[in-house]
Image 1: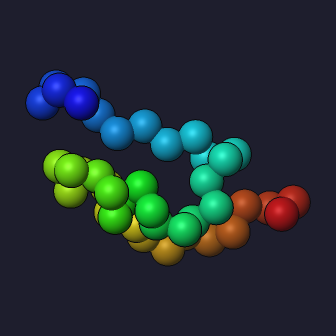
Image 2: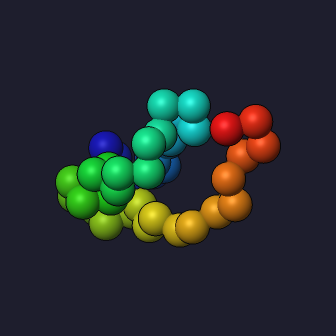
Image 3: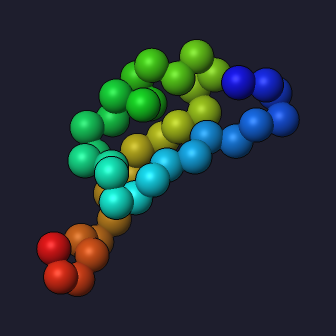
Amino acid sequence: MSAKALPEVTPDRCTGCAQCAVVCPFNAIDMVRVAPRSGC
């Protein structure tokens, strides 16, 4: 990833496992709690 690129998450595929944050070499991803989506 270049310095100008931003991390991109696909919400429908995210399970909240935080592995993206663990493996990100730039430490650019933080996991935060959010309210569950309705219908889940």
